Structure formats: structure tokens, C-alpha cells
Length: 287
Image (cartoon, rainbow, N blue to C red; front, side, top):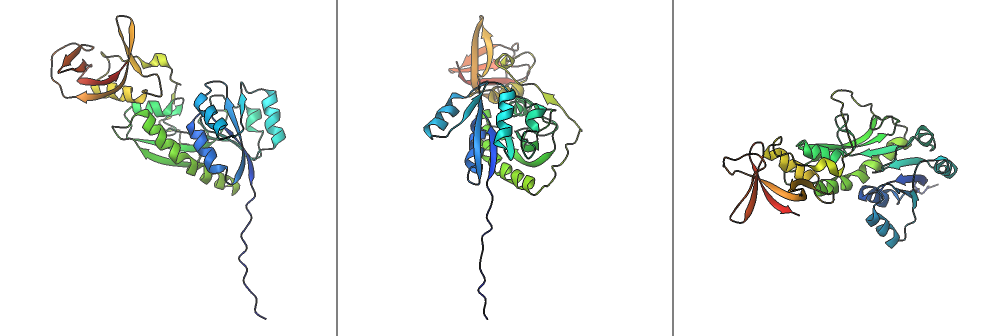
């Protein structure tokens, strides 16, 4: 008797996932993982991104806005019996009750080389520090922020011409694939790799007040990196002109030679230059 070989496609069970985000990174991850999973979206009222809200509403995608992590939120997560919680650019800290609320331990998307760039604003800090590469990671979430072991990671090159928005776009394009890989490892019970403690450093979350350019302390390369690290969509680097805040959004390093004090502004053929601690920059765009 001849038996016909049947190609039976293994049925993949959909997982219930809670995705917490406030930015385009989370939105790109949602687009990728919703194909094979049932995903609920949670946005934070803190630092709420109105453009994200608009995009979700336009696409008729449901979401919830959370003001703070309280017992109501924790009970909601528990009652939903989520397989996994994913934090993808989320400003609120998860407590131990939240970490224990899903079937699998939550994961976090961190856009800084670990353990060197733990903490807030990792992309901004890496550009400010003149890094040529950044490493993005999907890590297991722990009570100690950004201390968790690593499931997946990827090295991304930063060009000298890249500003912070361009780097964010690179990172946002790379993270969805890393998340899929991490979910696969979690489903297969693969343990994440423990972080090294060598050269560990935690950076603070940056705010607008941190954007002051210190001409007397920063050379031209440092000023250039500083400006491109916090340009739009961030408020931008700034200096004071007679108590008025002037913001610089774009600059370039100049080979100009001239004797003058740091912080001296002058024009040559309609172009504005500034003397730094060492060297000069040309201001391309300011307001």
C-alpha cells in the first residue's frame, strides 16, 4: 500500500502580549509582533506622545493610557494573563508586582551598549560622547534598571553626519527583529546572558536644562557632537545672547584660524562662526 506523505504545517499558538511604549520604537515593534500575537498597547500619560496617539487612532488601533503603576494596573495585567510584557520606550518604572504579573518575565528594549550606557537618554549620551557604534539590546527586566541579562543585541554604526533623529530611525528599524528573536528564545526557555560588570556606568535622563553649550570648556568636536545629539525632535542645544536663549540645531566643524576668546561670535561672507575652547564651528541652523 502506497502512503502519501502529508505536509502538515505546525500550528503556532498566538501569545497574549502587553506592549508598553510612548514612541515610534514601540510602534514599529507592534507592527512586527502583531502578526503572530495578540497585542495590547499601553501608553503612559507621562511624556505622552500626541503624534503616536494620533497614528493609533487613525489606524483604529485600541490602546490604554496609564497615569501611574498602581494596584488597578497590576490587577488588570494579572487578569489578562499575559504571556509577556514588553517595555519599548516607557517612562515609568515597573515594580516587583508587575515583574511577576506575566507568565514569562518582562523584557525591555535598551538602546545603549551595556553595561557602559545604563540609565536614561542612552542614544543622546552616546552621540555626545562621540561613539562610532552603539549597541542596542533586548534584556530581561529587573528591579535594577538596565541590569538584566541580555537576550539579543545588535551593533549599529553612527556616522559623523548622523544626528539624533537619524540614529533613532536606525535603532527603530533594527529593534523589531531583535524582539522577535528574543521572544523565540523565551519560548524555547533559553536563558539570557548575564551582563559584564566591567566599565559599568549609569547615565541620567537628560532634560532641556542640560542643553547649555559651554564654549570655554568644549572643543569644536565636542560642541558639534553635542548639537547633533540633542537637535530636533529634542529642544536643541542653546546659548544665551543678552539673557535670550538661542538654540542651534545644525552646525559643522570649521578649519578656520583666528585668535579670539572662546564664545566669540563673528561672520565671514554671511556665515556665522563661534570660537570653542579649541577650534571653531560654523552655525548652519539656529533659532
